[in-house]
Image 1: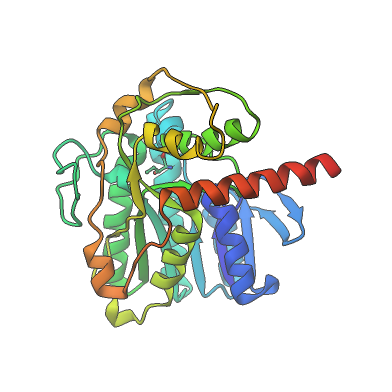
Image 2 (image 1 turned 45 degrees about the horizontal axis):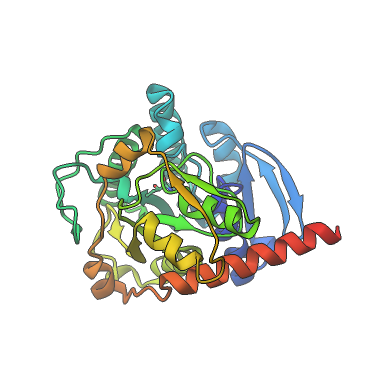
Length: 315
Ligand code: VAH
């Protein structure tokens, strides 16, 4: 059985579908704080900070893989730093302990470009830069990577991890991230509404389209063990762009799309992150390469969001 925590989140929603497609509905145990049932089956209730509840599922259901997606993201995380740290680390240590105690085969830890801070080179940020993150979320991911490496080297738990850039997808509305503008903007465009962007127009950030992010995750988890040379986390890149560049792309479909820029506290977070990522080690170790460029992303986001809108109208 495959357990997902945080299955209702932005990545969790898409990963749940991909894992069900790959392994079948009966193999995937999707969990989150809030229950849900849809055409893919149920999302059961599990608070990943509840060690007993997690252990019960792992032991009784003979879980062989865990994808730990439950976390509080960068922007929301700043509202209550100590609570963010507690939730992000307690849940991750629960997962690592369950994996150790019950011999779970593989464990996935989603890290983030948020682990980088102002010391790292901003352009082509490499795998081995010094990590001085400036958000609690980034601190929790940087230390989460170290814990994963520790459980691998001390107990042999097969922990694998990716430093996701900002993820763009149509599957769900993102919650509490700094890169969420790149999803919100498409929702505004298809409704012919103006968008107020909370980052300045020239703020370049590394991003990845959801299909590339999911494929990277499955390719990493399927790679033969001996190919995994990094047990903290791999940089992966999709592409980098600025709000101005995504607006120019959207205007190929919506020429009158209007935007205004009103930077808020998330501008400072974005400026502490890389503007582009070097993922050459992932390319070398397990053959990673992204497929989607910006206009492909705009095309698919607009098409899929319009389809959803039509379905909602017919409902
Ligand atoms: C966030 N989407 O904004 C997440 C991600 C790189 C950004 O970690 O917090």
